[in-house]
Length: 102
Image: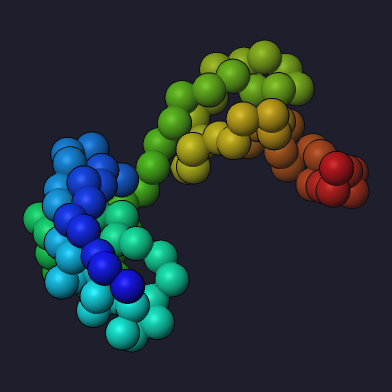
């Protein structure tokens, strides 16, 4: 199979990078199914992060509105579209009421 250089977009920084024909051949030889998602800079930055138990993690804090009471709240994740988000109080009351599954 003949490979040609392709332009991909980095999922972290959004810049375009070239996935060379040689790199594609390497992926094919190793039976890798997914094409690269990150540019070399972001890949290196990600690889240099400490991992494992006790490693510091980047905590995501997102301001949103509680789906139950309408109060402004901060949640430690990025909400998924179409899924309800609750403030701490509403989450606790739903958890103890057994309404956790939807």
